[in-house]
Image (tube, rainbow, N blue to C red; front, top):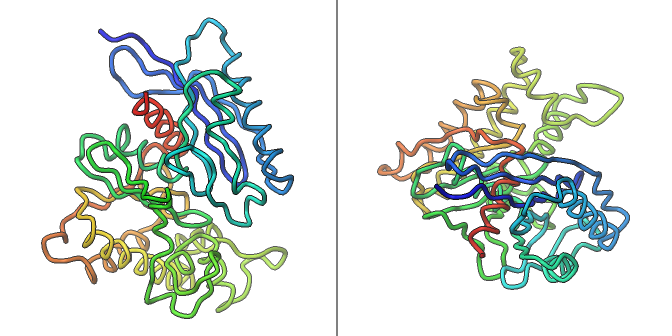
Length: 321
């Protein structure tokens, strides 16, 4: 029987930096955290401050049990990660000063141990493909629907990263439903502009006003109304779900995945869809675009939730050794 192994994992997002020591049990069962912690990212303080918090979080995790032999650090990072070096090639205005941070090289030098860096949505896809609902599937197309929309394509255990490390920006494909709507990336007409949590809140507000007058409407507000049977919310969620499904159909036509996995609090809660409206609208949109041989491709809900990028980052580290 193999030995129990330990990997330090870090998930760097725009809001928080999550760290964990992931235990890979000797019996081959699913890895799980034996230590976990979170600190705020505070991205407005700039890339150097964020880097310092990341290194500090890793050192705390490694010091949590000095007797535990950790074989390396897997990092899931916001932004576009250079696949050759592990540096941050590009980040948008959510993470000012994050572009150009030599994350992988600096951590390797500071810690004196193996470090592997991958994009956060790519890590999410790896987690679901290796140990989540996509386990034992040859190929998995994974999309995370949250504040924005990101994704990953995993085939035979390996995630597609692309020449620049930018593969997986599924939210930035053209969507008929988003024609003329500005996108956060600076272009227009992208899926993220109509199917992310931010966009769902904006669309409802533009048509019907705020759900709560004291603050901007977000996707959760619209989802809650939808589940209560509010016809206005149902129409907005149906439109978002159909757009998402149609884009999934187009992506399936290109990639032909064995299974499609959707994750993120906007569309699911626990092990199931957040509402029947989401489920039916995504299915209708998918059927409108997918080629006939692909119509039966399963569209499943992810099961690892917040652990997915931490497990995926660990998997990426192990594959790099």
